[in-house]
Image (cartoon, rainbow, N blue to C red):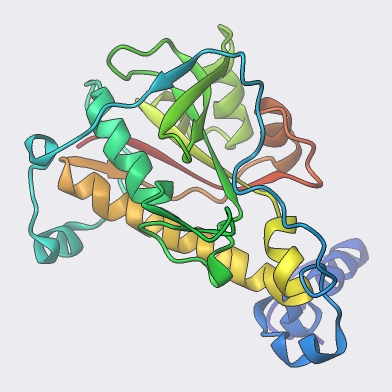
Length: 265
C-alpha cells in the first residue's frame, strides 16, 4: 500500500493509477543488485548508441562563439550559490549568443572524448559517462538568432535550426499549463532523454541514474545563469505527449524529461 498518497484520492481509477506508478516506489530505488543476473547489451558486445543524435549533415548549422570572462558578471562561486533561486519573472532583455554559448557548454558541452568515441567528459556528471540527453531550445530573444526551435550539437558546439511558426509561444504556454513565463523567456531549455544510451550499459539500473543526471544538468544551468546576471526555473509540469510532439520526437525512444527557461533578472 502506498499510504500517504492513496488516502488523498477520491475514486477507484485514481487509486489504480497511483498503484501502477508508485507501488513500492521502485523507480526511486537502486536496482544494481539485480545487475549480476542481467546480460546487458554492452556485455553482449553490441555497439553502443552514438554519443549524439544523428542529423542531416547537409543542413546548415550555426557555430557558437567562444566565450570568456567578459560575459561573467559574478565569478564568485559562493555568491552564485547563495543567490541561486528559481526565477519566474524576467526583464525584457535579450541574451547574447556568447551567453547562450556559455550556458550550453555549462550544461552539456564536451571537453574531451575518451576512447574510440566511447565516452565524453563534460561539465556535468553522468552515470557511466552515458550522458543520455539531447538539448532543444525554444529561442525567443537571442541576439542574432531567428525565433524557433533549435537543437544543440555538443560534439561540435553548434546549433541546428529545426523550425519555427507563429503559434510557438501559445503552444508552449498551453503545454506547460499556462505558465506563461516559460513560453516567453528569451530561451527555454528543453532536455530530452534517449534511454538506450544508459540502458545499453546499465539495463534496469539505468533509469534512476538518468533522472538524477537530469538534475545535475539543470543545477549547472542555475549556477551558470547566476554568473551572467540571469536566472532560471526548473519545470517538470508539462503535457508529455504535446511537448514530445512539439520538438518532433517519438515519445518512446526519445522523450522530454525536463525544461528550464532563462532570462535576465
